[in-house]
Image (cartoon, rainbow, N blue to C red; front, side, top):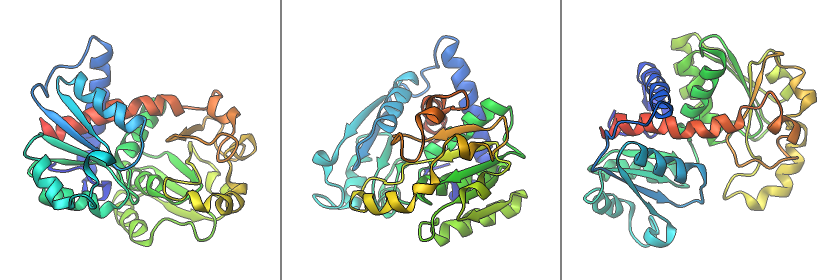
Length: 305
């Protein structure tokens, strides 16, 4: 695995190995710490968007594995504005052993990988959030002891998180059902990527416009903010369109009795999810956030070690 840009570019076997590795690294950390496998290596972290989980989890993952990380914000680089993406890739990859980028345009991550001499990890782009989806699969496996044969329902915007979760479900054997308002569906090319992988693994993919239909019989109910970074001007319009798509106690009655609730954070409590669901017995939201650390350790070891 040279780069980690999106789940469509990975094989199902590669992703299963990453989950197994993440589980073992988590146990190792809790038993006394991880081996310093990445000693002497530094990760350059490019940020066009603000971050809590991505910034801290990647930096701590490198430290736990014996390496180091450098945070580079918009003021340091100005990716594609102050300097072209190829120029940044060529220069930065002569200093560090790996690059993680959290950007707007997915093409910027693709171009970084094309011109970089070192591995590139997509920490988030407008099209995909593969690191988040891997942590989600780790969380579900810990909860149920398996992934194959479960059903995940995504309620809300067909955004980058929904796209990567759909691809992850297709790889790992979970049926995937999504409910979005009309006009907010996942992008057609990404739907086709997910369908092709799902067909190979015997997975069902369903698209709905009513959340109750998507959640029916689900083992996992997942939501995300209705307004992602860069969409602030659409906030009032989206609030009206998504009003019926809140994850709350009423909606959860349609899921299985043992169903859990996930949210990739940050959450807008009272909009896409209620406090009762965020903080209740069914929530695995904060275990899910912690698992970003362990899933990313696995990714870092695979591409850097």
